[in-house]
Image (cartoon, rainbow, N blue to C red; front, side, top):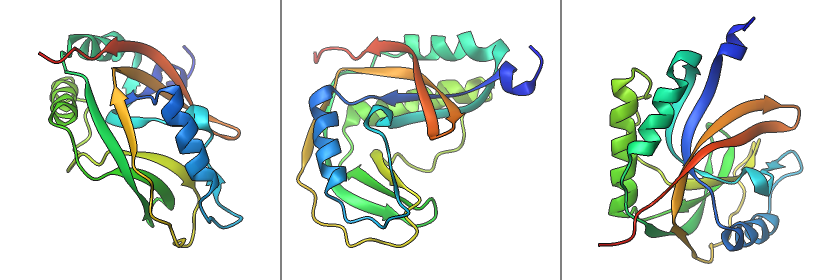
Length: 181
């Protein structure tokens, strides 16, 4: 490989919404009163990041994949219940107000294993959300959000690359979440 960019990948673990949730997110995002400079996130890019590994050298790609394969988290349901404007990254998100125990457990387990590989960033807390729009320079008047339930049945290892129209996300592997006991 000739360059650093070819020998590293930006990797993260995420939940991808099922089609019915994605469709409801599209309708919700389309109805938001955003400024003309705002860029709505393309529906195929909707995801909920569980753990961000960062730029990972090629020598660790399979180790990161094994981290995902070792997880034994249970299926869970959560609700995206509110729109939020985050001024520093200039984004509007659909956010969960309550965090299921199984999601928090998966978040902790992934971060612990990534840290053992020297990869995990130091997250202060889990903030489950789906980004709906970027480059929102001014805080919009956001309406109340109709609660949107999402049953998580699997999680994925994803790669992020920079494209001409924004980030490109590629699913590298997916693992099922386990049935309730």
